[in-house]
Length: 382
Image (cartoon, rainbow, N blue to C red):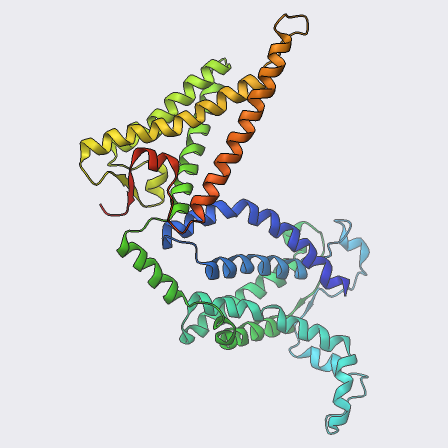
């Protein structure tokens, strides 16, 4: 049993790492496409990633301990089996099963060859279910057949080539029965998929809700949050590039960050009809609903609200890390100042976190402080 559980355990570890890396890009993609986060789409997509990793590791693991796998095998070792339905002969051989006596069929469940064939059949059955979700129409079963066959062929070639030359001999055989069973399982999964997919909203319903939100011109708070995360990431990247090319110190860092904030949060939306880089990616922009001149004034207020929060955190962080010699007459004062600013910094971060959570989970009843302070509105209309 460990031959099956160990690969799945390894796949789970890889999945957690991969999901952590892909979560923010996935949020950006879904909010950009649908204007909200469809939980069904997210669950199906991430479960597909986990399934694909599990299937791959079940096929490849455990790996040989050495690359010279030829030294572990006899000279006449066969690396392929091209006889169709050989698994049937292997199952019936010396099993005691008599086809004319149904009472002997129970002996099937004692045959390792039977379980091996069943595993190969079931392995790509979920793949067929996922293909039905992506292709939707039953008439696309030929595409499902083709994709499933290509995937199982990839598995078999990967094994017989020793993972494309990493091992000098194949450590598992190329089996035509595996090709047939995997493909049959995938096609069956495609046809029975509606029974499983009935538990989730259809893609038509997901798209219909996205079109409704677009018609209502409703921009979710998560879209706003993702937009500012993108802008802050760009700002931080630009500042780090500048600091790497100069003799960096705290003053230069603050000046570079100030310029970057001013350009990203005021100059760019001023010249780009209320778009920042982040809001452009998330497909919305800012407007005052009054006029262009008033919008520009409020864009500056928004920049100020964002910059003030940055400036306070930088000053608090700098003072909390300040070091003064114990011989200095200001040492005791510096200890209290460092402790006080550290407490202020922590409180500020907690308040900011709570504010973000309240806005994101308020069902659009609240706005972020920088939008509220500037009295700007988000819109998808041009």
